[in-house]
Amino acid sequence: MKFEDILKIIEIFEKSNLTELEIKIDEPKFKIKLSKDNQIQGQVIQVPQIQNFQPIQKEEVIKEIKEEKKENIHIIKSPLVGTFYRAPSPGAEPFVKEGDFVKKGQVLCIVEAMKVMNEIESDVDGVVERILVENGKPVEYGQELFIIRLNS
Image (cartoon, rainbow, N blue to C red; front, side):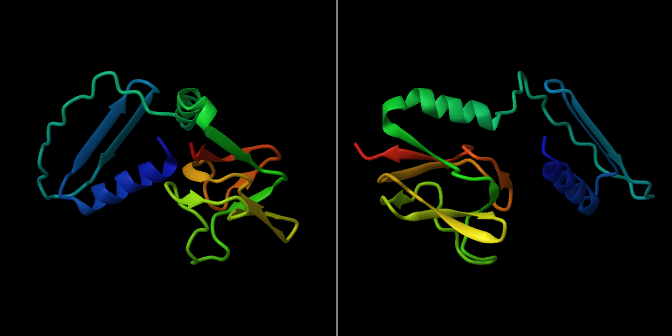
């Protein structure tokens, strides 16, 4: 579970009428217990236990896409170390979104390195299947950035 997800749970709990909340997930081992010290009596909510809960890892999704469509996919990798940006400037629309058709030479993102903004272009025509890096995150040389489904 991501830290942002935990913060969202806490935020929702604080706004609710509940006085206690406990979440347990066995695999991977995770437990969170929240309580309010209020005089207001909260509701008790029974949530059915999720059987065989398995969080999906990004690596598993990528592997599944690669195996499923080996001959129809192309991976765009970072040509340098830097910071990944999906848009030309803060607040601007991203260059591409998942599901967008891209043409060879079209800008997909920017990788900033030492204050230089390097445009990363598609080297194939196709559809953006997955964007593998979050905006503003550091990337390494050769790191996979995009999965492009080629036109058949």
